[in-house]
Length: 227
Figure (spheres, rainbow, N blue to C red):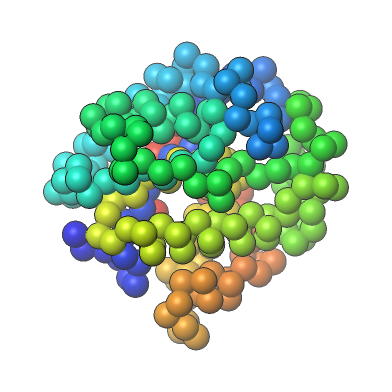
């Protein structure tokens, strides 16, 4: 399968379907809370995940990508795991098989204890902070730069474990915005100092780039080809 640039694989991103926290207007960002079954997909989110699976299947067929070359890598949170399961079911891939892999580095951005289980109305406070300085952490939480660092590790893991695959990355709003931001900057860097992916990502992990991550926002259940 043909891949873009120096990447070994092609990548799509999928934000989880509408979740119970989305419906309740709650920020659920810690690993401890995020894995709880009470915070998985709402019924609308299951429908969104199903639709995303059908769309992904269509795009695979249009690109002549066989199912054996498909991999689904997903965050361990219940809402992303639930989404990945629905997509795997649409594609008729065994969820417990080797083609589906959970990666802790794809987890939700931890916004810190002062935001955890609080109202969604507090998100703009964090995004304003990111725009001002994406290296500044919300108290006890992760900065945009912190998330970019672990997403670089996730990319390195997928690139080392899979070759010539179509990889669906199932994650969350902020991580996927940040991932798209750094991958887009890597693609646009016409004079890279290195062919090493980690080095190239580190070169673009700078305030002027990371502060713009909201430009790549995804709706719940939205699928997007990125590489």
